[in-house]
Amino acid sequence: MLGEVVRTSHESRCLQGNPLGDPHTRDLYVYLPPEYDGKQRFPTVMLLAGFGSTNHSIAAWSPWKPNTIQRFDQLLSEGQCPPAILVLPDCFNRWGGSQFLDSPGTGLYQTYLAEEVIPFVDAEFKTIPDREARAVAGRSSGGFGALRLGMDRPDVVSVIGSHAGDAAFEVSMRPMLTTAAIAFEQAGGLEAFAQEVPSAGPQNASQFDAIFVLAASGAYSPDAEAFPYAKLPFEPKTGSLREDVWREWLAEDPLSRIDGSVAALKTMSLIYLDAGNRDEHGLHFAARMLADALSAHELRVHYDEFEGGHRGTSWRYETSLPQMIQALRRGSE
Image (cartoon, rainbow, N blue to C red; front, top):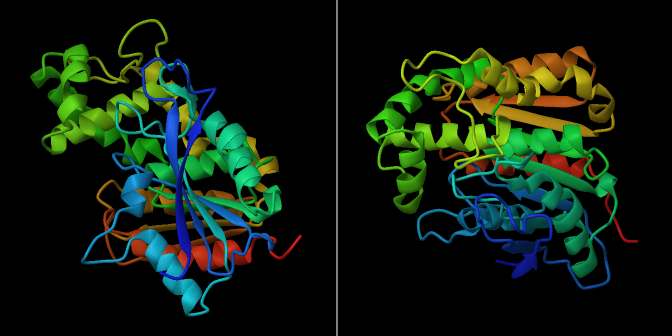
C-alpha cells in the first residue's frame, strides 16, 4: 500500500455516561494518501460502517480480497481518483449500531461525529477544514447515517454517499418487525433478549433482525426511563403495529425528511445513491424513491443501480469515491 493508515483514539465528551454504558474512548482510523507530506492539505471523506460492523471491519485485512482502504489506495496509485484523507470513526454500541443519531436511549452519536471527530481530525491532520472539502458516505445503516448527517448538519459536509442506505421504512423495515417479534418472544421477552443476545451476538437470521430492530428502536423510538431504553413499534403479544411508535420511526426516515431538509440538501454539491437490484431488504426500492424525491427538488443527485444484493458491496466505493471526491474542494491551503 502506498498511503499510510494511522490508528489513533479519541476521548469523547458527548458519549461519556451514555445510557448503555458503551465506551467513550473510541479508536479512529485515518488513511493518509501517498502525497501527504505534512504541508499540502487534502479533502476528507468520512466512511460509516453498516449495522453489526465497525471501523475495524472496514479496515480489516483479508488474504482473499482488498478492504475498502486498500481499494482506495489502488485507485490513487492508478490515477483514477483525486487524493483525499479517509476517516473511519467508531459509532458501535451494545445493540450493534447507533444509526449515527443523537438519542437519549443510546447516546449523542451524530453530535460526536459533527462536533468531536471532525474537529479532532482537522486539528491532527492536514485537512482542508471546510464543509466544502468534506464528504460522508456509508453502506446500509452507514448510508442512513450519511444521509442524516447531510440533512441535519449541512454545516459540516457538502457531499453525501449512500450505498443501499436505510430508508423508505414502510418497505424496507416493516417486514422485519414480525421476525423480530418472534425472536423476542423465543428469548423470553425484550428485556431477556437485550440482556443475553448482545454478549454472544445474534445466532441466526431471526435474532439478527431482532437486534437490528432493538438498535433502531433505541435510535428512533427511545425510552429514556428504563432498560433497554427503547420502545418497540409492535405489541409483543400479538406482533401488531403500535401506530404511535411507528410514527416515531417514520419521522426519522430519510425519505420522509426530504421535504423539510431541502434547504440543507441544496447546499450539497453531490448526493450519490446506489443499491443492488435484488437487495434482500428492498433497499433498492428505497434508493429509487430517494432518487426520485431528490430529483423532484432539482437536487444534485446521482443514482446507480447494480446487479447484486445487499451484502459484500464494499467494491462499490471504487465507483462512488472518485465522484464524491471530484465534487469536493481540493488543493493546498
